[in-house]
Amino acid sequence: MTAPLFGLDRVSLRRGGVPVLDGLTAELREGANAVVGPSGSGKSTLLRLLDRLSDPDSGSVRFRGTDTREIDPLRLRRDVALVPQLPALLDGTVAANIRFAAGLAGREPDVERLLGLAGLDPSFADRDVDRLSVGEQQRAMIARALAPEPDVLLLDEPTSALDEQARDSIERTVAELGRSLGVSVVIVTHDPGQARRLAGWIVGIERGRAVRQGSASEVLP
Image (cartoon, rainbow, N blue to C red; front, side):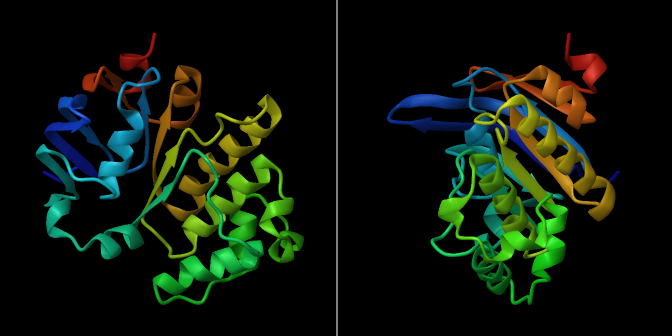
């Protein structure tokens, strides 16, 4: 039997003595996944564990069958790229951000192609990141995350600060990435509708526990 993309087994994590994840057991699969739940349910913390920005206090997180604590963090992050909820671009141009990320993996990026994949035209390469809208910054973050050619893209509430038109545009980009590149996606969202539109496999979280998982028709009302 093929190992899931990620397997989480009885994962617990506390911050300041307060449980954030509490014995969470779930799996995420190759392809498009969504982690759905209300604010404060532990969704973003789960995403950080997948990229090993944190380790659990107890339990295990496995990436394609291997405990993430046995994988060098830098190597893991070349395969698994995280786009945080708030854009966090380096000072300078969009192209400089893309080249920086590609360089960490020893790659020479095709900046124009990466911009196109993220839904930006080539003119954005020389734009300063400070002059971008929030939606454009989010797209630049996606282009930068794709620069090391990862197998998995983690997206933390990528449309939470956007209007409906920008949200729909980002969603089309995310859906197209899976089709054109074969990249697996894990998107964290509080919006069941977005999960239904973007994901084939859904994990529902409440109070640090996975309360349901399955297809959209099985999990979402």
